[in-house]
Amino acid sequence: MAAAPSETKLWGGRFTGATDPLMDLYNASLPYDKIMYSADIQGTKVYTEGLTKLGLLTPSELEKIHTGLDQIHTEWASGTFVEKPGDEDIHTANERRLGEIIGREIAGKVHTGRSRNDQVATDMRIYVRDRLTDLISKLGNFIQAIVARAESEIDVLMPGYTHLQRAQPIRWAHWLSSYATYFTEDYKRLQQIQERVNQCPLGSGALAGHPYGIDREFLAKGLGFSSVIGNSLTAVSDRDFVVETLFWCTLFMNHISRFSEDLIIYSSGEFDFIKLADAYSTGSSLMPQKKNPDSLELLRGKSGRVFGSLSGFLMSLKSIPSTYNKDMQEDKEPLFDALTTVEHSVLIATGVISTLRINKEKMENALTMDMLATDLADYLVRRGVPFRETHHISGECVRMAEELNLSGIDQLSLEQFKNIDSRFGDDVKEEVFNFELCVERRNAIGGTAKVAVLNQLKNLKSSL
Ligand code: ARG
Image 1 (cartoon, protein in one colour):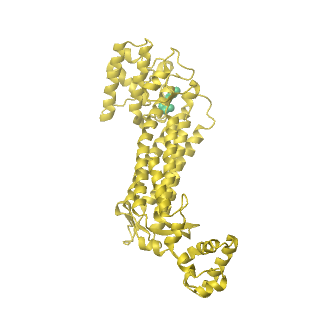
Image 2 (cartoon, protein in one colour; image 1 turned 120 degrees about the vertical axis):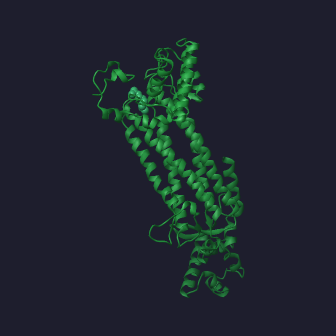
Image 3 (tube, protein in one colour; image 1 turned 90 degrees about the vertical axis):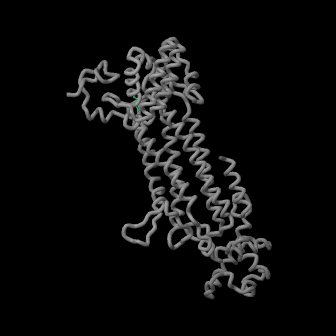
């Protein structure tokens, strides 16, 4: 028979019956929240300093507590911490162990005025904040890798697409810069989210506030928080920082999925614009000739999993009454899984983009003269013809070239151009049918001309 909770549980005082063993398993978060052991210990260290300032602990008790907590930290870090039945979560496990090390007399004072409700909210915020710092730096490296590639391959041209149909020539670096632009917005957005994560709930008690008037500004400062959450009910029950972080992960993975999809298409035999490094591809168990872009497919596929974490947790959070309810324990697995998935995805995407090889000839050979039909219209605009009219004239040129079965509109003779519209000059062919010129004309901010792309890259770098 299972032991009564009063013998093993920290909250066991008023319970007499044994818990269903499956309930113990169902209730326990230690298997996944022990990852926050360091945040939990930091929180307790600063909290006990706060209690000491109130005279609720003596300096010598504080010293013993800190020494015990340091030992617990070492045990977790070295993998020697022994988990015991009744260790529901990281908070109870650490407190139980502290009692064993320094005696229950002193350890029993640590939780004065604190609840696991403000404790878990504090631990989560410390833990997430610190992981975001690491993620921000990994993301910065990813953006730098894209930018470096764009700088070194600035001269390569390729088709730009709409509806996955060839549309207008662009620089390959412009394509790279477009994703670096998305990821740089992600980078800035993550910094903003981190600011909202970094607020202190500690000192709110179970819900109603601290009964001994603890100095919450002191606690916040000691834990590196930038502010104190201004309402104790909100402090213990607000999980918006989890939702925002999950939303960030979802949006980032959404960008990654589109980036990956483009590269998957470009790596197909039909396009053959890029080749993934062996390090990021796999073969087929049946077809010896195959080299599959598994890294990119996983990046694309994992975006679904991360969105699932966001939607799942939002469903758990919806309609929870104030303030803390155990539903909130469901914040951890989706969040930790999403963070790990995103971190790995950033590293894989960095590896992919820094090691793939491009096929400049294939990219440039995919440019076709019909992609310059707009430039043909623009040629007449420069000679004072209204665009709506020039659009029509250029369309006629396309139609005639098709009717004559020519390989492209550039194959029409000067005479044929002039027959369609007498305002075409002798220079029409060299002015229009040149991909480099076409790209270089798009030199307004954000365009695909070399100067405009280099400027984008410079701005991206300065945002990091
Ligand atoms: N393991 C719990 C969680 O993650 C800690 C808070 C428990 N609080 C409580 N009142 N049972 O949410």
